[in-house]
Amino acid sequence: MKCKQCEGRLEVVRMCSKVRMCCTRCRHEYQIHEVADRLDAETEALLERYTSIIYD
Image (cartoon, rainbow, N blue to C red; front, side, top):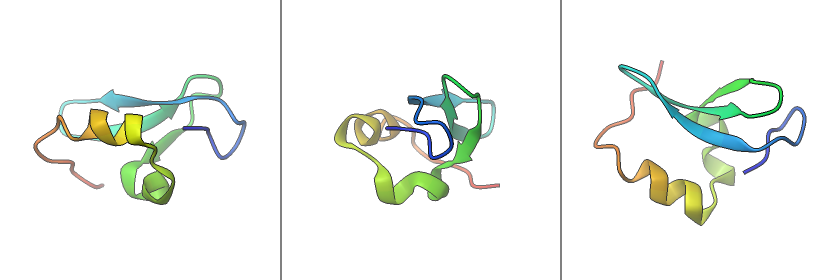
């Protein structure tokens, strides 16, 4: 997946009580629902590992 701001690569970042997407270039964080419409198969497979995703 690509960042909306800089076209950098988004990666899944897991914190204590939440899961976010973070750009490897500009470090902008996205909540999952902000990028849900653009999820690719690889990212969906990673997110399936988590039993729950908490939205802030």
